[in-house]
Length: 258
Ligand SMILES: Nc1ncnc2c1ncn2[C@@H]1O[C@H](COP(=O)(O)OP(=O)(O)OP(=O)(O)O)[C@@H](O)[C@H]1O
Ligand SMILES: [Mg+2]
View 1 (spheres, rainbow, N blue to C red):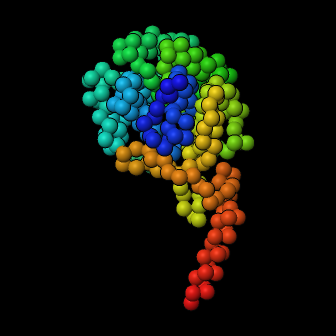
View 2: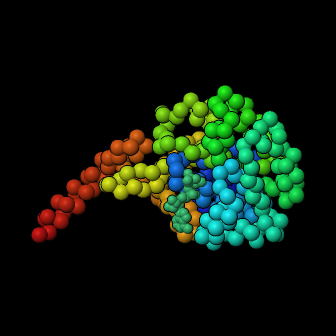
View 3: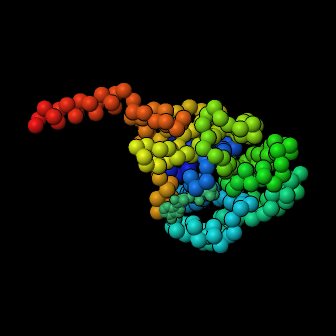
């Protein structure tokens, strides 16, 4: 089956080729972890590398700021818009409630033949509509987007998540999506680094390891797994035994040379 590639070679490799077509994917992470960057990168690569046009739906930022931030990564969103391959939709969450924004979205999807959409963010949507209606409205949105054949990213801003400490809302949301990519900061040797892990992916194998990533001048870059540490997800990393052994060994070897 063809996969929906993000264009990041390493992330696609973690996803065994990419996301599954029309899957709803949650990108969860705390503030500043790079959710918006990953979403724009996914849309821009979709257009420029895979011929899949895209829509960026935001409840949060002003368009000028989005164009400016994207330009800093070398992504010319204005040009893609002029070419009819990309659209930014800025709207208030209430426009989407009870199907209200569907005509607007429908027209835009048809207009550019969109295949991908990123929604920034579902947590903002949640804040606006309240917990009681959230599941239903989010479900409606996810179904609407899927029925149009689009592959989607839903950004979710959450305080440092660890597997076992999902809030009730987050657990509810996590059932609605097919795949969850978690971005988080990890503290190692007193330095803050960033780690990415795929928490779930329905119907597919995937990399289960926490891999380091950075937001660079050209977007998100994924690196090797944090192999030599364990306990990173709980916030108290320790070096794994083999690493401790190697360290001890090299210290001994060094002192023997003297
Ligand atoms: N042009 C750039 N070059 C390098 N790093 C950058 C650049 N632009 C942003 N960053 C880094 O990316 C981080 C934020 O990325 P981004 O806005 O995608 O995060 P976010 O998770 O969407 O944040 P928020 O929760 O505030 O919406 C910045 O804090 C900065 O460290
Ligand atoms: Mg953001």
